[in-house]
Length: 117
Image 1 (spheres, rainbow, N blue to C red):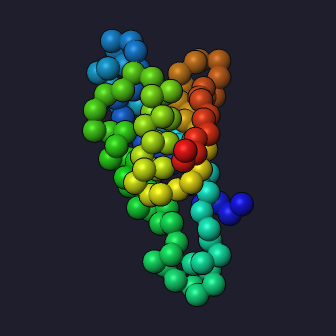
Image 2: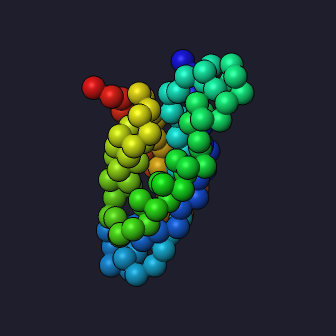
């Protein structure tokens, strides 16, 4: 399976369940693995057949920053739903990490995999 990857996409947004978290922006780090047939784009060196990681990244930044969200689980589901529906990706793995959420850990996070039905 071919994949298009995005690693540590940095999104500064309002995220959290505590009242103090709802008043500040915090950083989320997003990793994406998206199934995509890269052979078609590579065969003719044609951009129009590639999955544009910049377009995907910009869309996800807009999506996650448009309103406050409480849970990183919600962020992961929103990202997966968006990528599958808007970019016609057949399968996606999404990892959402929240650095500094637990003092003793570098980051905490969730990882999900979703596919077209």
